[in-house]
Length: 230
Image (cartoon, rainbow, N blue to C red):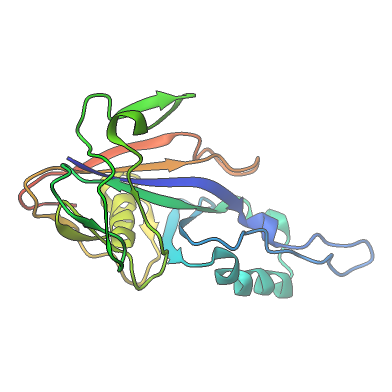
């Protein structure tokens, strides 16, 4: 079994992007609170039922959302208008079923396989949060370049689009019933390998004001071998 682990360890409520109204009219200066990091991210809007989500990849999440930050300020949104909308962002790690498979970096030279999934105690609980057990399966392989043009990784010897996979996780695998707002990258994932492919997503709890999502690892979704899809 291979493992793809999305560690969305950071969150920024969209309400933090807007300026505070001033006494007598006008708004205080707004800031863009996102760091200049490469990341995969999920925007979750919990204002209405069903919730919506958008998955993206960027080499600099601060620059990616400068236009949004500026437009929210120009239109004059108040923070309360954006409650229950947040950007979750973080990193991707993955493990092959066995070390015999080569695992090239994203669009770069091959990397050494750091570990394998499927070993005893491959996933454990630390501080109430389930996560991969690096002491057993190694630290995993990471994505060195979060670029929309290089999000395909060789996992168990076959190419997997990691952005597409996360979209499908939320659309189908996790069973949330949310609506997706991506305009592409929604294609069905088919596992043509001889081994299961597991997807694990961790999210964090945002600040007060966002309804209960996060603070837990959402669980593992297995894509069955030999043509299984979701």
